[in-house]
Image (spheres, rainbow, N blue to C red):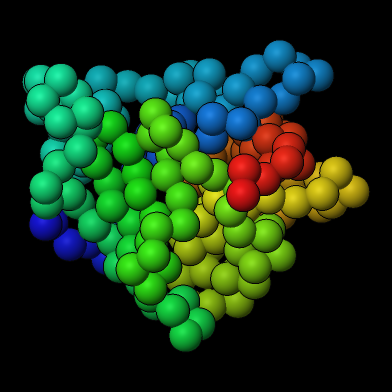
Length: 183
């Protein structure tokens, strides 16, 4: 297992791919665009090669093991009274809190498992911005909170992306978060 720390994900190449693959519900119906379509605008071959190396992708991994590695790139971080672990496989991202799986963004995705308010509280922690953005794919909220969620997400994304781009992506993310949670 390749262990990484939160500082290892604090780069543009990471966030381009992370946002691009973690929002199966991230779709803004009024603009007919998804998070992954928006992230394609920023994709470069260099960014793609970075992500492949980061996740341990190799030709045939999807056929051999459905994109799962025995020893994936793994981030561990402290949450209040809990340990967050995220495994980055070539074909999936798995989320664990205290060794219990709480989500997945791959082909059998399980998102919207944590109330948005719980994820938003992470912003007060050291590395709160990164923790907030990392757990955002698992967040759900009500329709009445969409505008405030959109604003908060865009505000955090502006650390990596332009203001206009952050606004566009946050609209897709917030719209997807208001759908009914899977659990």
